[in-house]
Length: 167
Image 1 (cartoon, helix red, strand yellow):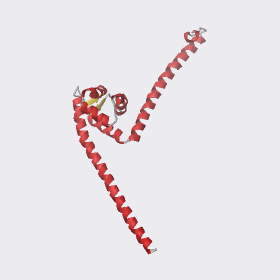
Image 2 (tube, rainbow, N blue to C red):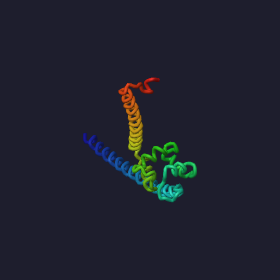
Image 3 (cartoon, rainbow, N blue to C red):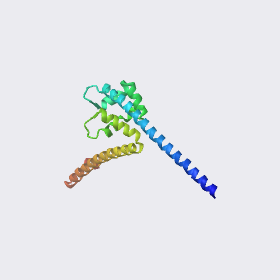
Image 4 (cartoon, rainbow, N blue to C red):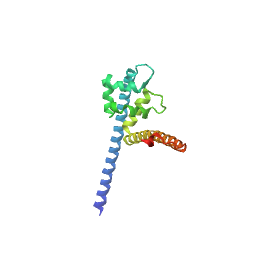
């Protein structure tokens, strides 16, 4: 029994030191990734300056889309973050929270980084965006149909056959 207790103490010490080493490794990886992001962010902001054709200090959707054609490094960085030219409309609309049609460089780079590093958060943002788009489209369709129905009922009340019912 004494041998078993000594073995348990030794095992617990080994496990504890392994957990501490793993925690230190995880922290070092996080710090490395943050340094890498800062390095890429500075480069990315320089690229944003190049993409900003009107020198407004912000990027429009058109300037970002053109970046895929005109700037190989921009295209490469976007591909590293799994964003394609086809994603531009959705991503830009999600990032342009105030609806101004412009994104300042800092906001663009930081928000892309957040989207890239928080996969579940990004997925929720995409879902939220698409649900809002569907809601807007459905509201428009329902309002048009309601208006058509209202007009048809008004015509019927006057004793006439509405065009859409006579066909």
